[in-house]
Image 1 (cartoon, helix red, strand yellow):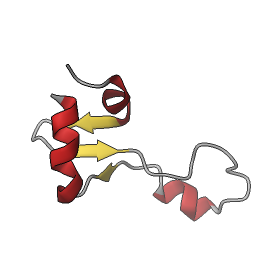
Image 2 (cartoon, helix red, strand yellow; image 1 turned 90 degrees about the vertical axis):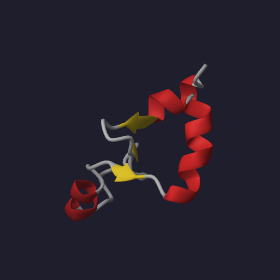
Image 3 (cartoon, helix red, strand yellow; image 1 turned 120 degrees about the horizontal axis):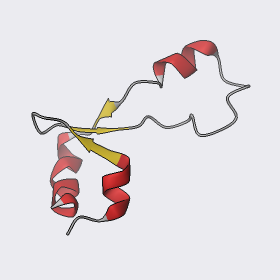
Image 4 (cartoon, one colour; image 1 turned 60 degrees about the horizontal axis):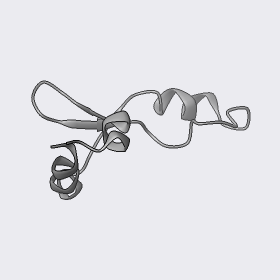
Length: 59
């Protein structure tokens, strides 16, 4: 059974890639530049070193 904390935070794509949200946009956006906010809007891939650990938690 997959851990719910992982399923909420990580998206598995059709090809099997793992994506996560970028850090730093939870709150306090007023002091961040427009460029920083727009760059963090997209999802980020998870490194291959962490992938095996996360896959074991998702399965």
